[in-house]
Amino acid sequence: MAYDDTTFRRPGDEKTESDPAAYRRRVQYDDTAGTTLDQSLRSPVTTTGALPAVTDDGRDRLGIHLGWEVMLLVAAGVLGFLLRREDVAALQRPALDALLVTGAAIGLLTLGAGLTLRAGVPNLALGPISLAAALQYAENGDQGVVKALVPALIIAAAGALAIAALVVVLHVPGWAATLAAGLGVIVYIQMRSGPVVVQGDWDPTGKAFLFFGGFAVLAVLGGALGAIGPVRRFVGRMRPVGDPARRRGAAAAVPAVLALIVSSVFAVGAGVLFAAQADRPIEPETGIEWTGIALGLAMLAGTSAYGRRGGIFGTLFAVTALTLFLEYSDRLDLKIALFAIAAAVFTAGLIVTRFVESYGAAYQPAATEEWNAAASNGTWSPTLPETWNSPATPAPRSDRWG
Image (cartoon, rainbow, N blue to C red; front, side, top):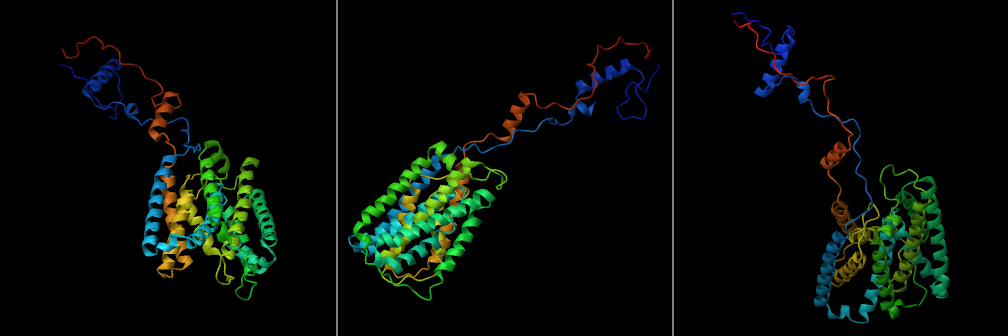
């Protein structure tokens, strides 16, 4: 019996196949036996084109915000219950009027913070501007509210416009530019050698419901407008999606400029309300604690620290809850520093921002779905041998075994 050792030689042996017919028979045999003949058939698939990147298209889930706002409403209700149980008179006039004015002042600061956060240019000068306006009113309140308020409004608006131009033209972060502005305002504040006694006799508590109601309307109306997709995306065009310093055009500059100006005006109004109902002299401190409280409340209300995203009723409920807490802690004489409150609120706001960013975005296709889509579009091809012949019909059996 004749035997040719090349007939069953495996790939990788030192000798090469000399009989093409035998090679084809071995191909068919090894394929049906389930063995690995040519590893190129089992090579991993490699792509020939880049997969499409997942981009943020500006669609947000408002249901996440509404669910969180229900929790804020419950928290405000619990604090109101605790305050009423501690002192029933705290929620009755005239104490209620002072409480509403305080809430309106905190609300104006929070509205300004939330607006600048949505626009992607957080205003860190809100607290110092508010304190400077309070000192301005304290020193000039005897000349009338208008004469004391108008110069502060003009200076705040002009300063905000200058900062906005710096942000838009030089493409620097809004927080950095406003921090520099806030430090400059602190210099103006600390030029006083001591506390300033309020000179005016205007009492805002007589229109407490009007002030708080105006804040509530602005908060809800602004949140409702922000819930409209095109409006929300227009306001949040400064939200970073790549290089934060890249040019975004005039369309992105408009909301940033308006947000900085309006927030500074709101801060002036808050400072005047604080000073007008103060029962003690205004201390020339820094005001940074109020910046922390305002930004923290805005984020706690559901506004994202990254911009654009926000709820509808969150600002109203968060401000109400903090106002009730401040009054409750004052009734209990807890003596909690404003900086401690600002730190706690700000930290809680950052946690809420992470929650909003994680669950507030619209559904994005998974990587595997994009891979399948790319495959169906013909943008990839497997690595195959350059040439390949299908296994031919086995040749007639030879008589080499005879």
